[in-house]
Length: 127
Image 1 (cartoon, rainbow, N blue to C red):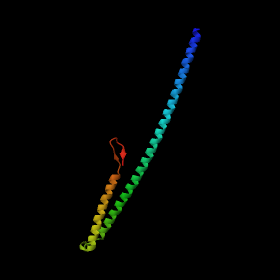
Image 2 (cartoon, rainbow, N blue to C red; image 1 turned 135 degrees about the horizontal axis):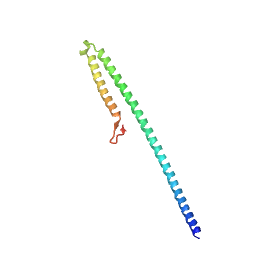
Image 3 (cartoon, rainbow, N blue to C red; image 1 turned 90 degrees about the horizontal axis):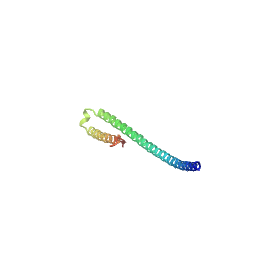
Image 4 (cartoon, helix red, strand yellow; image 1 turned 135 degrees about the vertical axis):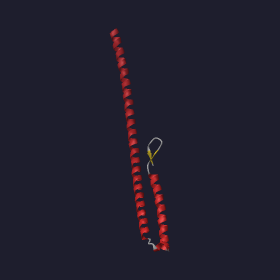
């Protein structure tokens, strides 16, 4: 009688343990799938941020090239202004164009500065 009772108790304990293990397995699997989805979402965010960075770098490089072109144009215009032409109307127009180009260079430098990555309070790069 005692042996049968002991066997019944052991069977009940085994069934209960089996049920708990199955429940824990389902919860573990659910948690794993949830973690996988989070990783996929983070990878997508990272991909988008990399695309933004690439775009900003291309924009920055184009602005730098435009500045170099304008600086070269200023240099050529200064060289083309001869000593006699400094007082002439043509010389005045060229000086105005040079001043305008310098202003444009300053504006482009500001755009480049704005396109440079900065860090927020948490230390992440932002644009």
